[in-house]
Picture 1 (cartoon, helix red, strand yellow):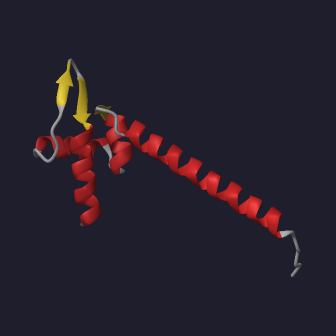
Picture 2 (cartoon, rainbow, N blue to C red):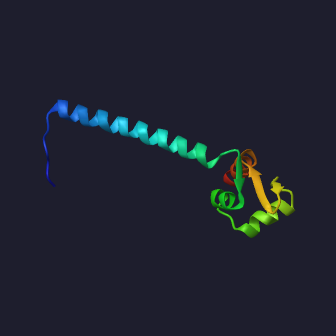
Picture 3 (tube, rainbow, N blue to C red):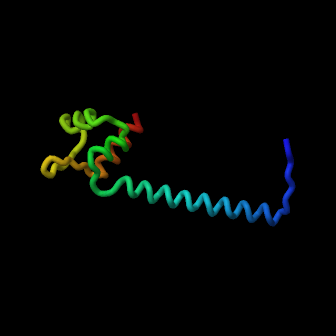
Length: 92
């Protein structure tokens, strides 16, 4: 094992940079979460978030476990409904 000695001021500067990096990562994570849960989501996005197959998502629709809206042949899901379902899955 190798021991490296540095000045206290350099050590403090490194800690400050690490703290700034942590804050930046937290902000990026929050932006990412906000982007994932935009107002409406399509089938692919919902399956990815819930980690389920399209067939399972269809079963959820057919049994009324999840609400949806359909425009022509495209189905959309409200992000608030997905969040609720996600919390139910996590609680189990």
